[in-house]
Length: 441
Ligand code: URA
Image: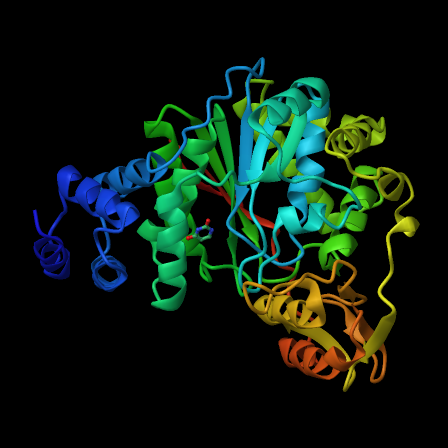
């Protein structure tokens, strides 16, 4: 078989066979297929797409390019969750403890920030001493003892995806539905849980900007998960506005803890409760209403917060900052961003908000950049609220004062202020199961 012929086939809009997909992934991981040929293939897939069978085969080959984690040493049903990435999305830190407090195990591998989006591992590392790399034995032990563990992806989890993702990032082939579906689901299948709840974000801060594309992506991922024998469901959630009010690593841990104490922002609390209910439902804990009531109780009785503290301690973290979030190290500099005119905030370009936070040091500008854990943005006003000229819309935090100017400009360019109050946007648009998509608005 020659890679040239496989590329030509996809370029001509034909369907690739299982053997051809296996040949290209195997050869690419071994270094026998060079980046320039794989780049041509990625662009051919980007332009001509893949059918469901091709996407499922690609997912399976990428998953099997490395370790397939065997979670059987952990007792009971294990449920995983995955967000397609957003701004202010600290849901894992809320949802995993809730689900664990309801008696369902969460053994989760999370990622770092990518582009304008934040990553759970970076957020967790803002907790002093917190270890996000554990041996497999330690990982299993933490889950068995506390009900949950969240760590970074092990080095050999879907290595083909690591190579492919880096190549897609520089060849303008990231936002392709089959490529995203295979990338996400290969890692979920390799990570070994029994059930998978997908949080597919839609809007200006998401990789999928339209609801239709988000639903198509969710349908493909649910089909792949179910085909592999995993109970899989997706929620399509709003990422046209940052989730919650705090963006940045320790800031997001603080907001997650507030939410677990029952004092979180309404949007974040609602999305977390819906995600947690979905995970409990997949794990067989009852219908969605019952699961929601269970999830709510873990907030009101403090049991979910106790689970977070237990996990932090089991992974070497200093839980005093969770018990009293005022102990988190603060950024030495802050800047208030004021409204240039009065009116209603009608839009906040969420990708730009994420970039503005990254520019303060909360994200990586290059792969080698060190994260400033205390950097980020506290939103004082969100879409739908009125502002007066000169009123504070946000406070920026950083350890490097010289970063303020560019970040404040980026943030201001994200905000649209108009005379008319905008209609309220839904938080959850649809639920996707193997039976199809159910629009909730
Ligand atoms: N997240 C991933 O892991 N892969 C993608 O392709 C997009 C988002």
